[in-house]
Length: 360
Image (cartoon, rainbow, N blue to C red; front, side, top):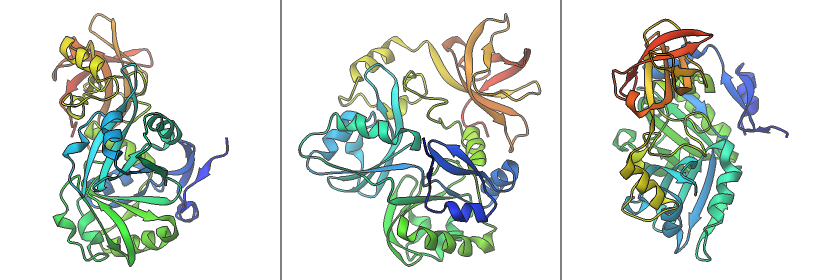
């Protein structure tokens, strides 16, 4: 399959970005080093081009009913200008994808889905669409820039009349930005460092990128790749679809009970409700290494008697903490913070401790 290119591929190449295949796209994984880029976001401000993400517009009389049916969270609680983290449960207890639901106006929503699942999600949601819903896949028309870090608001403020500090977390405005009309400026992001995500029509992507780089220069803005995006989200304990959640993981096992609302009916809600009442047998936990070593995806998690009690789903060396950290599913008996577990790293059994999220 031929890899797709995001709109600003040429800019990332000019900036020395190392381009790698990711979710069917060529994407910049790093420009300098993962460590340097990670710290830039934690301490200052960085810009990610995440234009590979998918966007669906859902509108019409039945729009909310459809979203309520296919997502686990309660979208009826959204007000105009608010976003919500949610997931698409499948019929067998797992997760089709995790996503963001934006309420643009009454009967008008935008769903933001993972790049690797654009086609899968589109087909899944369309099965449940009624005549009074209009759905458009605008994934190839929009670029998405995540400007993240404690200095993000200052770095962007000169580009818009909107007072960025007044946009509450998980809220957004549609406003003029860098001379471009109707840009969605959203106080969201997957780093835990604060900041904004900007949805820009492809025709204006380069203009927006250049303006952000220019206005952010005084604040030390740098382009950031997917490598640092991964370490940043792991420190926060945020799930990555395909690693920590997938078609075989229940939202309740994954610690996503808070986005699973049984105040409404949705796909497979009866079974998930029964699972909640019975209790899950495994849970996704965050852990820190006690012994020196780096946990990696699919490493075995053991108890003190060498019995396998789970598997690592994500792992890395934390740039902030300077130790190995990870996420993984463990038997419920080992899921309490403080529990001692062992990670099998190249046939060595290394001690780790379950920790409350976030890990930093």
